[in-house]
Length: 232
Image 1: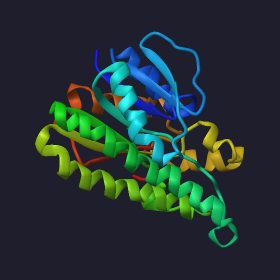
Image 2: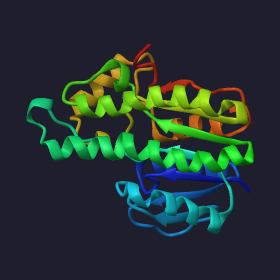
Image 3: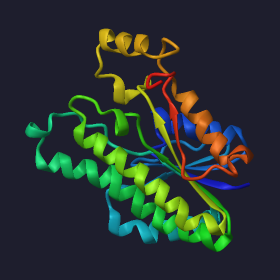
């Protein structure tokens, strides 16, 4: 049974992704700041992704405990809103650390093992705001845009040894990170989409599962949008 590490797996998109991958037969290592209860094919693991210096030893420990890692889903992230002119520097730094630096460094140590195995899948969670922009999300958008460039370049670095790297760009999804939107704003966004609705966590999870499965074997360096046609 192949191991897939999913970050930010305790709720929202991460939880949906973990459940879908487990249903598809993977063993999911569900990473969160606080470990939850184990479930069938899902083993929770606690780690603070802001602790960059501890990552090498953390990944080494995962391999010792579970064996080789076949997949990595870089899903964890902050969704802090705020106009750039008013955002505290500490919040800007925290966003960049967790949304950009953390997945890059984590990928570095996980991908080393994939390269040695000659197989592996990496999926980075970006966002449609990386290309469309959104008011009061300039820093968040910058971090998600950085993952697109990272995805495309890393795909070229590791493709020759059998590792794929892709990004999924969700639109506005019904999760904790969009609860701050008013019902009026949510309805406006839904009506603006081609399908006149918001995508759901299960839709994003299905895309990640596709990339992890046989269907994704020849997809690499791609950014796949899941937004009910909001950017069509």
